[in-house]
Amino acid sequence: MPVKFGLWRVDGTDVLRVPPRVIESEARLEKIIESRIEILGLGDLLVIGPQVMTDFAKRIDLLAIDAEGDLYVIELKKDRTPRDVVAQALEYGFWVRDLSFEAVSDLFEKNHPGEDFASAFIDRFESEVPEVVNNDHHLVIVATGLDSSTEQIVEYVRGYGVPINVLFFEYLFDEDREYLARSWMSDPALDLPQAGAGNKKQPTWNGVDFFVAIGEGRHRNWDDMREYGYVSAGQGDKYRKAMFKLFEGARVWAEIPSTGYVGVGVVEEPAVRVADFNVEIEGKSIPLLECPVRANSLGENADDEELSEYLVRVRWLDARPREQAVWEKGMFANQNVVAKLRQPFTLQQLSESFDFE
Image (cartoon, rainbow, N blue to C red):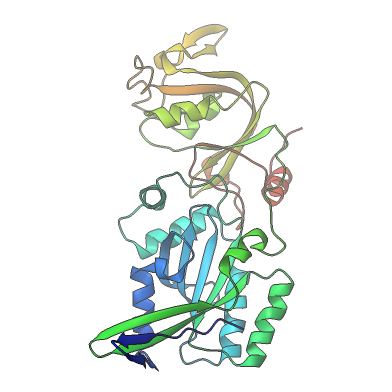
């Protein structure tokens, strides 16, 4: 049972209870929560979007994300029965559990035109998006009350690890002032250790496989990388440092954002500046910058240690045109240039799609 909230106004010797009232519209409460989501008491959250459309043509009232990359489905009771809203929240939980980084990013950018998800995340939390997004999710029902049988349903599924909780708001009005009072069915702080179905943890990394994002543009092109045997990033300190995570013998899986996985190979040499990267042409070692390439700005800032493009030599085991990219819903994608690839589903799909030993 939730803790009931009461508010009294003290005027000298008079103590008057401020009576709760019904807020005039659920839409107003939704707008208040969207603009000041911290009133939920869940810590700092970034709103991905209101009225987020699911694959089964229903809309989540609010979808948000925290600094750890966990998703929050926030659903208002509105005019539905308590049992209906609980069932709806569980249905949404089923949908959000497999959302990839790309899917979350697309949802954010669809609801915030002109804004970039990774940049908004950094602005909100002053840190980069975690390597793994949506490792856990939380279901939050916002209501003015629940009947006892529905409370029992919520407590029952919570007991089996379903990350659902109910937040009660009371609307109070005292002369010309309005108040919102909050209480929880269960302390949300107690949900953190068991959030997610069965307290999901990141799978153990095998120490070999890396995800590498191929950010095509004027500084880099996948066809150049296929032909000359490398992956690259640069034009900034954090991109340069990402390349140094790849060690000799590591296996890299190249992925073009919004396209899919296009190659797998083994690192043969660690990162060097583009000016120091040579390739063998007809038995001769030639600087890559003297070779014909599609990325016409590959050599930009070549003499600048911080801004230069950095290349990692790769022996491709299976590299294919971008038109033959491999992608399935739920596969791993990440905004970071380099990340440890540890997701069993992704590794399984890739092992079935690429020819390598």
